[in-house]
Length: 491
Image 1 (cartoon, one colour):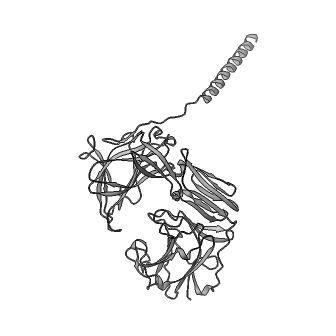
Image 2 (cartoon, rainbow, N blue to C red; image 1 turned 90 degrees about the vertical axis):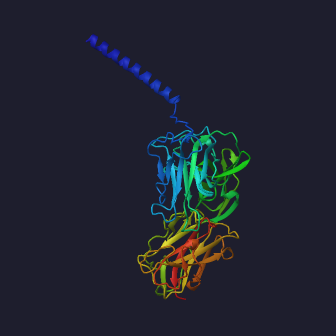
Image 3 (cartoon, rainbow, N blue to C red; image 1 turned 180 degrees about the vertical axis):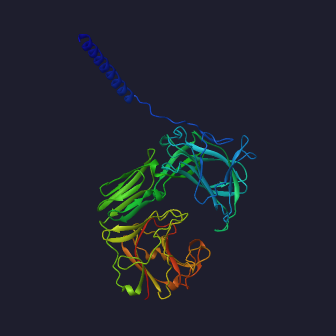
């Protein structure tokens, strides 16, 4: 028994010693841990894609999936280049070219912190302007999207530079290249062309200097608001400008590059994505810094407390066809915020205490419009001659601001078709708009004669037997609107 006891004692001591070593090693490893690093490969395309894997090309919805190929006949250097065939507007496979190039594999990416720009050589079959070229879009977080817009190409090879707003952020970037290009010519009948890009890579140029970050398009904006509302600075014009070889180059910049600050977080707080939330009555100033440089532009937001409801309608329900109102029974509506190509407006039905409202944000992105559609079934408005709606605008009104209301008659097929169906618009100028208060508008349907935005609908709405939609268009002048009590009636 003595020998057995001694053996157990030795084993216990040995196990205790091993456990002590393991714990000590684990603590030591934790203190001196080396985090995973990613390759700092600069090249994206030389004579072929470099280090992207096998599944790396992802076209945008509505674009022509086969627009990109490798051209072994044309190149700036080496034996091949990237070829982009922009389609005609009537191409059944897609009416524009656009996609991202992403490093294949979850958890992959590249460390781009040692570079200061994405560069490439490009030319086209004719002098054209490419809508967008950039990087940082991976169809995941899309956290550091950076885009240079309206790039002019010629028929000769020219080198182009897209500066990185803050390279220190890009330690694991999957989205190495993005582009979007449409045809040239009148809307709806654009014709295609071809352009080539070669020697695409990240570089440390050393000539990217004099950073000039901007929020709110560089303006000091004052905005009236109310508790619970939100203001998205990401939709307000975030840019970074660098001087590269004596020339200023500006890129649209994701909010994650910036550090936002509120002077009074209890009044209005701001998160890392530039989303401002109004919390209580008072005034707060929102500013930003990018890579240690103070951004030009600021937001001074003043909350007067809770938003008061819009005026309660008084017309009898028998005289009203209601699209959106708590005072009446609404007709069937397909949606209050249509998801159309080019539309950046977010939001829709929101609650204001016991009252429902239509709250639209990002109203100044892309084409700046929002559509309410009701085609199941369409509405016969031959007995109605006016439309009513209540409107609330939080921001200050500038001289160029306006709001256009567009109405479309869908026709007997109940399908809204641009360039086919009749429609008309009526614009409300800045002189009739007021900030920080509810405005009530009663517009005659007989005045909706002007063509709608982009000339998609024309002819007016003299025929109102199959009305199908209402669209509010800001013309990229207003960042958000609140709407209530939309209805048609007979005066």
